[in-house]
View 1 (cartoon, rainbow, N blue to C red):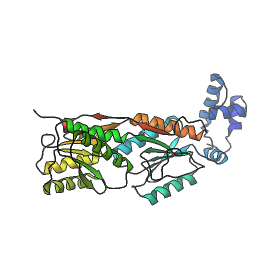
View 2: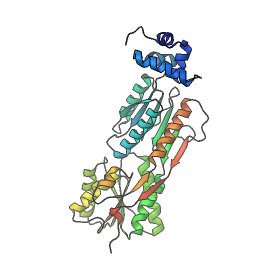
View 3: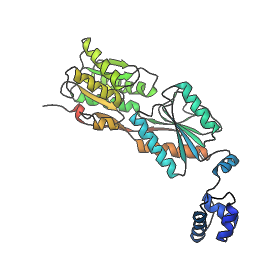
View 4: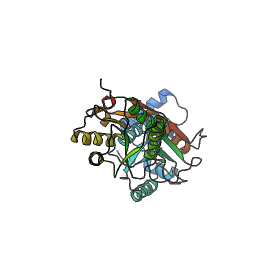
Length: 331
C-alpha cells in the first residue's frame, strides 16, 4: 500500500466526500447501502488500512482491551479468556492477555504496561487486589480482590456460597458421613466462600467438619495430601474439592490407596471444566454460568467506557450441580 493513499484518495475515486469515507470506515453517522458498497469497494481495490495508531493517539485510547488472568493454565480461567476474546472481537476490539501466575507484583506490572499502551479498558480475572484507575475502566471477574468495595468497583462474581453448599449437600444425599473439604490455603476469596457453603450443609445435617489444605493448586499436591490424610488414620467417605484440579488429584490419590471412587469415597469438584467431563471416573462438579458472566462483564465494561448509566456494578451469577460418576450411589 502506498503511503500516499488516504481518505482523500478514497473519496476522489469513489466520488464522495472525505466526511462520508470517514463515516463508512468508522461506522458512525448516516450513509446509504449503495454509498457504503462503493466506498468499501475502493478501499479493497487500493488495499487501504486506516492509521489506527494515529487515531488512538488523538482519542487517547486504542481499540484494545487488556485481560489480566491469574492462571491461564487453569481450564476454567482459560475458557473465560477465550469467551471474552471472542465477544470483544465481535465488538471490533482486540485483546491483550496477561498471565500473572498469582503474583501481585507481576499483576501490577502488567496493569502498568496496559495503561502505557492506552488500552480502552481492563478486565481482571481473579485479581489479587483492587486498582483504582480513573483514566481506564476496570471490571473484576470471578472473585473479589483485596480492597474490593461494593459501591465503588465493578464485579461479576459466581455464587460460591451456593456452589459449596450444593456440592456438599450432594455428598450428604449420597450417604456420606465423613466429608472433608479439600482446598488450597492460598489467598483466594472464592475458596473461602465455597468453604462457608460446605460448613452450612454439614451444620444442617449435623455432621462434623474435616479439612485437607494443600499448598499451590495442583493435581500432584492434592494426591499427596489426601494420601497423607488417610495414612494418619482419618476416615473419609466424601470429598468436596474447591475446584476440579484438586478433585482430579484427590481421585488419583484415593485410587493409589486402593480406595475406589465412587464405591468407597465420593467426590465433587467446582468449575465443571473439561477435566471433570473427561477424567475417569467423570466428576460431579459445580457449573458456573460462563456465557452469562462474560456477557455481563463486557456489557458492564462498555457501559463504563461510554459513561452510560449502570443499573448495578455488582452481579452475582447463579450455579448448578452437574452430576456424574464420582457421586453415584451403588446398590
